[in-house]
View 1 (cartoon, helix red, strand yellow):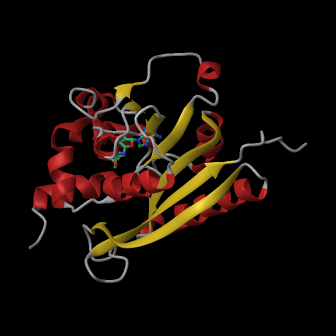
View 2 (tube, rainbow, N blue to C red):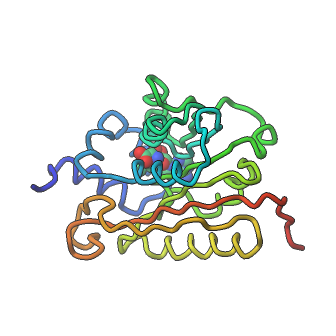
Length: 230
Ligand SMILES: C[S@@+](CC[C@H](N)C(=O)[O-])C[C@H]1O[C@@H](n2cnc3c(N)ncnc32)[C@H](O)[C@@H]1O
């Protein structure tokens, strides 16, 4: 069954190359329909990321402090809540999706406006799902994600392998590898998933099967403080 044309248009609009402020405005306008549209898209990233993190993360989960970056409407936090995580904070560059999160069980509470140093090494795990992609969150964010994660804590990241995101994905993987070589973190998982979400155009279908593939990465921050070179 094909995707409804209106869903295809809304998804295609946020996938199309545009400057970040314009793209965030598209997310502002998409917030009310986001969850029903991504259900039609068979968007599995929140489920896959939460399952991978819960598997890697030593129990118990309830007291662990988690930060969901680019949390949108809170789909990742809801999946984590189902797996026993209870202390969930979220941030997003677009206010309307964030205001829809935090209104029910298992949804992230908005991170209060605190000075950045307060958050240093504060979180047991940080997630960034569905937003590490061309025109969204740049890979230069990685050191900041590491900074707010406690030594020994976990980072769960995702990206997509559709043709228009391959250049970004290569840059991201270079940055991930560089941080691993410098001793900042250790890779625990890089899981390629074929049926990540439905493609909205033929050209974006990774294997010509109507779907985009994607990757879940899990990293563990090294317990020894990372010393910058130079
Ligand atoms: C595809 S949605 C994913 C939301 C949620 N993580 C999920 O999986 O449902 C991407 C989210 O990233 C946010 N976003 C994209 N680029 C951003 C940036 N540079 N800074 C902050 N938020 C950003 C958007 O506002 C949007 O809510």
